Length: 115
Image (cartoon, rainbow, N blue to C red; front, side, top):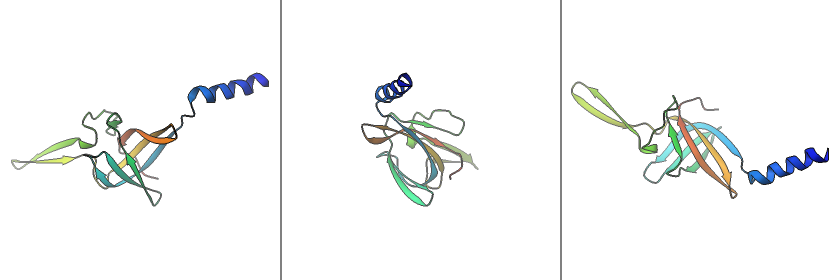
């Protein structure tokens, strides 16, 4: 019993208290230039700062190197329209981890269904 308890305490100490959370919701506000995003989850708005090193991905797990600024082009009737992927109303899954007592966004993925 002592070995099991000692192992559990050692594991907690070695991981440094890291924890992760997956948050699903809809984007209500976004400032891609500042890396700020607000997501509505269960009727509450949550604000996040998305660091430059956070992984941004499409629903098919393809990494989007331009992050929140990722754009796509649509050509129709000879006109080209440029739109961003991360926009208000888009559904996202945000993965955070706690480091030094602060929640840090490690990944943001388009798609999925909000809670």
